[in-house]
Length: 260
Ligand code: ATR
Image (cartoon, rainbow, N blue to C red; front, side):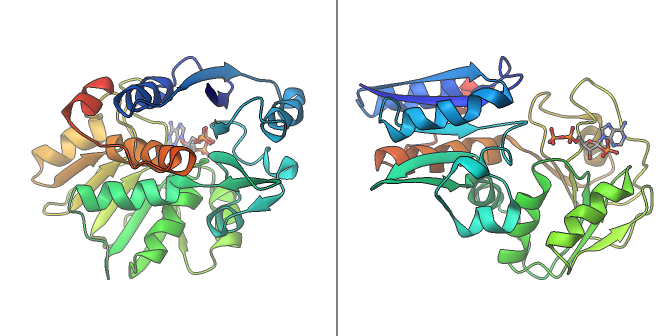
């Protein structure tokens, strides 16, 4: 039996096991997927279990997406560009780090028919997922990315990786086509201290639980298209699953129910 894990700290909230175990069963694969809370000091030993083939794949979440890099042998281009790993696997003798958040974001947008080609995009927040979103948007040919974060130094750190983006002061709203909330505001029913008085734009929230944050609710009332991060989450899992199992698992109504 193959054994897969998602590692993080905290990890209780992760819905990855539900998704992966659903697809494992659907595809008659002899495997199990579990979540495990680790400390920094346990990372190397845990990754060595993949080397010994005691385990067969690892998903990585906060706060380890960057910290695992030093224990890996090879990195994908997406990891080189974002300094962020969410999927680890063994190929030949090498332990490989990949980042399916990038493809997950793109496939999620395509699923929702949100076209970013030649569009101006405002990103709010500078947390762990933002480099993946930026890399994905750039690869899809967006026109312009503005990045705004309450703590400006964190936005500047991201600009060091992606020089083409423009940093804006928190609260400054440029002319944009799509705005993405990548802050943690909204997770607990709280709301951003920024007001948008626009319509016919796209408002995207990386948060999918709650389904409609205040940011999305208000945007919808004002006549904007809205989308949450559910499909990004599902597609990043879908891509990890296909790397490990050589099967692209189906995304159907039953999969969506898992996240509700
Ligand atoms: P991650 O776990 O994804 O790495 P994080 O580093 O905790 O997330 O980042 C959360 C994001 O939400 C940050 O951009 C944070 O802004 P700061 O860098 O200024 O902390 C943002 N955030 C959290 N609370 C916020 C608030 N009340 N107003 C605006 N931004 C907020």
